[in-house]
Length: 115
Image (cartoon, rainbow, N blue to C red; front, side):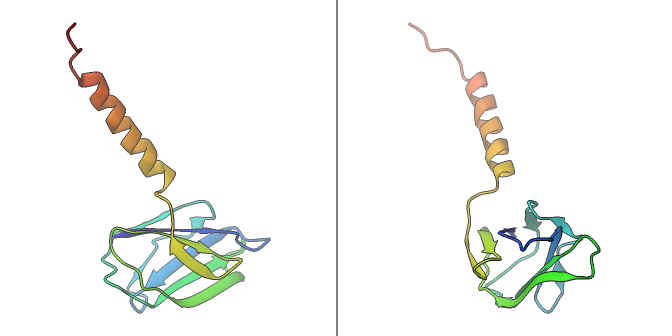
C-alpha cells in the first residue's frame, strides 16, 4: 500500500511498469509516464523493487533497474530515471484534489457563525 511514480524517463520512452516481491506484486498494466502506480499490496520493507521503462512498441526497454528499496506502506515514492535514485516523493496531485474536495465540502456544511 504505497504509491510510486517516475520522472526524467529517457527520450523515446512511452510506458513504465514495476514489480516487487519476486514478481508476486506488480502494476496490472503498462503505465503512462505521468501515471502514478497506487499499489494496493503490502510493502513491509521490500528491497527488490524493479522498474522498467519501455518504448511505444512495449518490447524495447529504455531504462531498467532492480533492487530498489526498502519500500514501506503508506509512503509515496518518486523514482528519477536520470539519477537512478528513488526518494520519498510528494503526495500525488489526484490525492491532493480529493482531499481539497473533501475539505471544501466540509467547509460548505459548517453552520454560519452568529453575530
